[in-house]
Image (cartoon, rainbow, N blue to C red; front, side):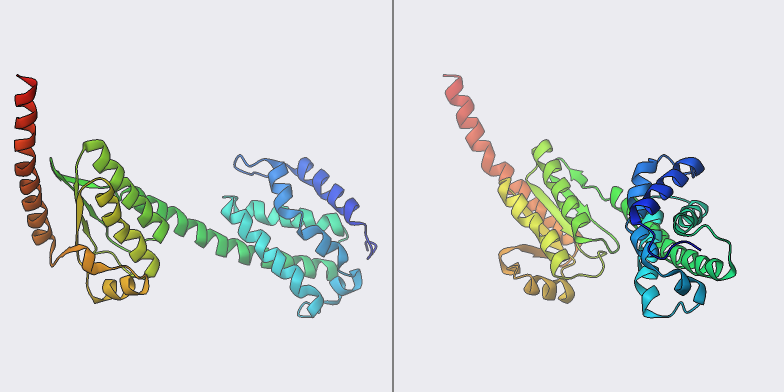
Length: 275
């Protein structure tokens, strides 16, 4: 068995050498980056007494921290898009860097260690799949141009506040680039309102006003009103319509009023230029 006081530097050096020799499939991830992810685990493995690893008492306090870190390392390997085979191989290389013996007790510990890493890997894979799905869903959330004077933002489902903020920013950029001053933001199909989501969505009113225009909100039910109250957002100062149809009608009427108000100024300016 390996010396229970095995020097951490020696273990680290052996693991690096084993990693470079094995060259596990990393999908393009550099071995150095993989080494950095696993390195925090090595001192914990080194400090576990050999007799403890062979004892089979894996529920004891000495193993708790080690198995927790193994789970976290497994999660990180999943988030880096490595395969389960590579995760198992890397975990085995780390264990062999501490103790390369094939004694039954050591192998039982290795099996528990790999199981802990795979448990973390599964959690990380679920997290990664969810993250990718959210990114794909968010990529479709773009402002919709209704006509020459109005943009609309209609979002369905449950999205993180950061995603909603990006959508509202995109609405502002679209309005600025198209020289459009009117926007409609529909909350009817947007799920799970809370303070942060309300802050993100109702920021569209401030953006529209900064551009010299206005924003009409629809779908503002009691849930959104409660979330706005929690975020200390004054809805009374905003334009809210009962439905998307009425919001569109209000925006078009406002656009017509603005067009009528701008016409005399342009005619007056044109008259001065022609003198």
